[in-house]
Amino acid sequence: MIQLYRNRVAITPIFDRDTSASGRIIIPEEARDRCDQGIVKYIGPEVRDLKIGDYVLFSGYSGDMVRLEDEGKLIIMPETQVQCVLLEPPTIEVPGLYHRDASSGEYFPATSEQAFELIAEAYTHSGHAYQVHGPRRNEYENV
Image (tube, rainbow, N blue to C red):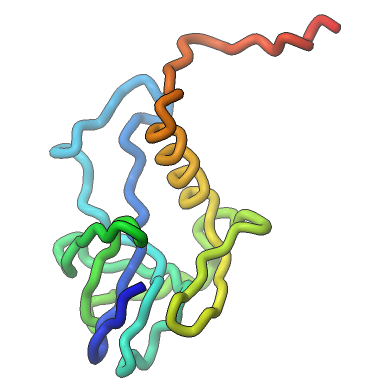
């Protein structure tokens, strides 16, 4: 949990994919665009136009990226550096998966990208990660 001052917002970044659409070409970090979108996770006391859960766009050069142990990556910036709020949800919300605002206790839905990111990170750190090559057969497909 963090406490923001004045008109600051903390945004959970949504990064572009690091592979091509086919999944076969890995795009190096130097060639990827800077993160320019995310979901508002925390707001300061003087924030007027944004609310927790807003999907926002901002300049890829604005704000400060921080990584906190319990929060993951956050981009902290003044509210005035946010360019716009997208009114339509960008992705499918995952039923039953929510973020919780630690200060107010309010919940807001998580997106499928966030769910996959959490699953991938947990799987990677579990020590059981492996890479599957080619299509995987279902052992029950011939039953």
